[in-house]
Length: 255
Image (tube, rainbow, N blue to C red):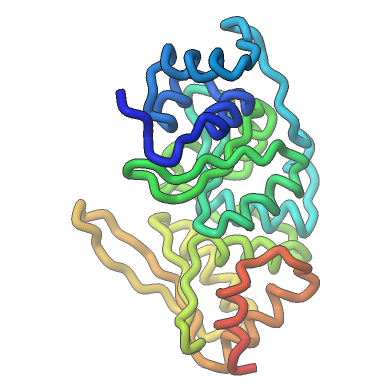
């Protein structure tokens, strides 16, 4: 089994210390479990006995209490995250690796980031915690959530931060700043998002299209060079540095 490009020995050691099971490590790294152990042994890394739990640093209370930071991270996980159905791991994929590091910092988590390899080209933050996985599942981030995720019951004061996370995850902002859309495969989530935009008195609508496999994709739009700055005023108020800078710049250019 050939090692995936970009998987240096240091990266293999980092992933191993994150606590991922060998089954997942083999997929990401592109080596057999024996090959991985050979790399670890070469560098004198202590191997954990099979079945022994490794300790992973993370604030396991993070998703138990609403806050602006928690709402933003939830928006990212709702759109770009997934949970593993077989092990107690959650993953967040993002082209903007800096956002992954911000999420790790907010969650007091070890910043274990797997670079894109093979057919997966997007960097991925890996967090190993049964509690985090269970809490995210309660909030709607379940295995194979793409077509079934519902719009969560977010308290009003945290809704702007949540929507900012959703846009940072699956949002697209036109470079000219006239339109923005969020893409989802869930009809329920699309209509929940549309209801929020309409509540904020934004010019918004849903369009649909079929994929090659004849699945329906929903795009929730906000349109108009006056509406995007209005949306920006809502979601970036008090955001600090918790946002995708390029999307914000495009959204506010007509303010």
